[in-house]
Length: 239
Ligand code: IPE
Ligand code: MG
Image (cartoon, rainbow, N blue to C red):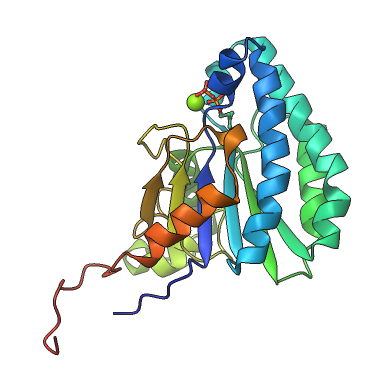
C-alpha cells in the first residue's frame, strides 16, 4: 500500500494554553499569547519539514461558550496576529486559507482574513489553514446548503462525495494525513471531521505553548511507522 513516510497535510488541535498559564499562576490569556509564540516558532519548523499543508484549530464554534473576557481576548489576539504576521506569511511564500463561518465574527476580522487569503493566493509551495469559528458539523451543514442552493447537479441522486466536497471550506485542500493533539486530551472535538476520515492520530501530553521541533519529530516518527491501509487488507497476497 502507498505509505509515503512524510505527511502531506498535518492538522494540529492546539490545546493546553489555559493549563500552561494556570501552572504558572498567570491569567488564561497569557497562555493564549504563549500559544501564539509557539505557533510562530512551530510554523517555521513544519514549513521546513517538507509537509505542504498545515491546519490549525484556533477557535471552534463551541468556544463562544467560554467567559466573555476570554473570547474577547482571543478575538483581539487573532486580529493582531492576522495583521502582524501577514508580512511573515507573505515572506514565507505561503498561501493562507481561513476555514470557518463568518457568523458572529467581527467584520474587521473577516476582512483581514479574506485580505490575507487574497494576497497569498498565487502561492503554492506551502499552505497554512487557520480554523477560526470553525466546526466540522457546521461546515457540512453550510456546504449542504450551498450545494442545494446551487442545485448542482440538479438531481440529488447524482450527488457524490466528489461533488459535495467541492462545497466544503477545504475545497482546494487535500485530506489530512496526520492529526496532532496536544495536552493529553484524546478527542477530535469537531475539527475537520470529513477531512480526517483516514488520518493517523498522534496524541502528546505536551501543552501547546511547550510544543517544539522535538515533539513534532515524535509525531513524524509515529506517522512514518504507520501502515496506512484506507480500508484494504492488512496483509496483501504478495507478502
Ligand atoms: C487551546 O487551549 C486554546 C484555543 C485554541 C482556544 P485551551 O484554552 O483549551 O487550554 P486548556 O484546555 O484550558 O488548558
Ligand atoms: Mg482545551
